[in-house]
Amino acid sequence: MQSRSEAARAVVAGYTAQGLPGAASQFARAAVAAAAPAGPARARSLLWACSRLAAWGLACGLEPRAEVLLHPSTIERYVTAGMRGSPLGRRRTVRADLRFVARRAVPSLLGAEPAALARSGAKPPYTPAEVAAWFAHAAAQPTRARRERLTALLCLGLGAGLERGELRGVRGTDVEHRAGGLVVAVHGERARRVPVLARYQAPLAASAAFAGGRFMCGGVSPTRKNVTSRLVGRAAGGVGLGRLDTGRLRATWLAAHLEHLGVAALFAAAGVRSGQRIAELAARLAPPDDTALVATLGW
Image (cartoon, rainbow, N blue to C red; front, top):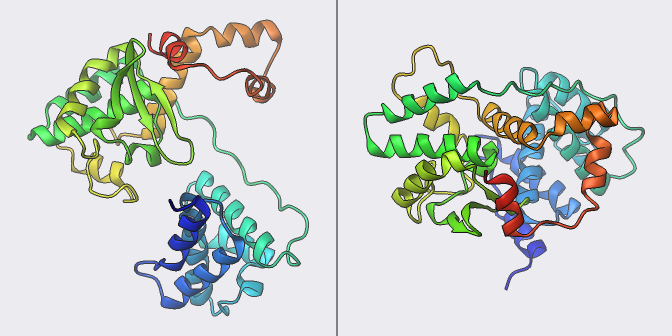
């Protein structure tokens, strides 16, 4: 059986960035090979960042060499100027990925850590009225496939808190009854099982039965991009709803659990303003089994 590192090397060796100059793909393969990522998903993320950096550098007249493109000043110029208009979260991730590759490929180049990019605030949860409107919008789609896929997207976000990159990998067979509730198996770097909130279990189970072994949100490949954008963009109607935001779906799921678990009361009683220390303490606790997860999060 192929190990994760062997799988990563195979991904790097076969990488070609669609729509970018061949030199950009060549640079990305060489740089990421030197970085030796631990797994295939990490390799794809680094390849994406390095190939885009190289394409931007070539357009600016820079040589596609590691000591040029992975220089701290070049990385900063790319993140601030070359990625202008991109979400701050994406820019932070790309910069971290590029500096990771630089530390491995040309460690003599990096000096002090750069100034932190501003962080975007938490996204606002959807209100109950907005949630009801989105489900009505899903039910009004002209074909069953669209109805089931949009319903699945809503239930996976609102009921299980899945993020955009995780949504595209869920098949109907990943939704199963377990430990007295409905659970979604999430694959990838953060593989886990997530209990579904009780109010979303019936529609999600129906969408899972319709999908079977296929991807619940559509598409034919687990590495396909923009699956949620295509799904939402093709949805008919929905005047006045705005564009569906998967980040807000997850925020709604998180807010519901925080309220149910009394976290606001705990923070107030402990005088806590940031969750960092709470997260550090939680990381030391024994992980719950499926029965405990469903009992706590499947209400």
